[in-house]
Amino acid sequence: TVCRDPCNRKLLLRDADTRRDSGRGTLDNAGRGGVVGSNPRLRSLFDAFNTGLHAMNEAVLEVKDLVKFYGHDKPVLNGVSFSVSSGETKIIIGASGSGKSTILKLIMGLDKPDEGSIAIDGQDITRLNEHELVSIRQKIGMVFQESALFDSMPVKENVAYRLYELGVDDDEIDARVRETLGFVGLEDAIDKMPSELSGGMKQTLGLACELIHTPRVLFLDEPTNGVDPVSRRDFWKIL
Image (cartoon, helix red, strand yellow):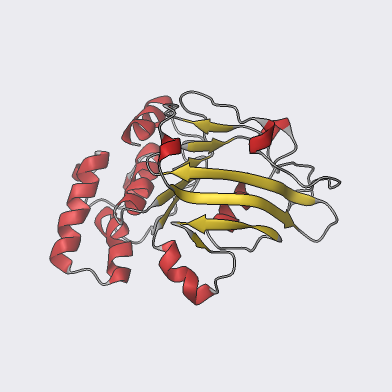
């Protein structure tokens, strides 16, 4: 899991763990000053478990020496490196405009880095074309800051949508939808429309939509921002 929301205990990376290219400044993609790799505001990645056991696992996600420019002579990302093992949670913290969303876009294959590599399950995705990225994205789940739901579809169909795309049998879809909704505590809302749900329930539904296809990597972009404290606690408890 890679998320942008502060949770649990903090583990600071050593400077050697966040490498950067010398002689270059930084600039974010919106024109605001921001740094990834050389600014202490975004030098920390948080380990929600902090057990020290994850280093023994093979990395599911590995980012090496990532550099990204946006039409200027200063990069928004400057030599960023980190890895995520199976079962591990990393949290990227930084000020607005410092490059957090850029990292997610690059990992999801929505943009290409200027330098460096991104490997998911050992496969470098930076040189893949759009068609080749389809199978990679099936390994990825993404929960946005604002719930990305189909307002015209009931809860059941929102959760089932990814499985419909994959051509899963209807009976299996029904069973998996009910199992997933039960897991996140929304089984009683299966026939409701998104407009009938609270903000916290919508975010939980967004999580269910991603969990149903059992992604290898789950990205969370400030998923509990603006959610009430009780819903926020329940959301992180599910994870």
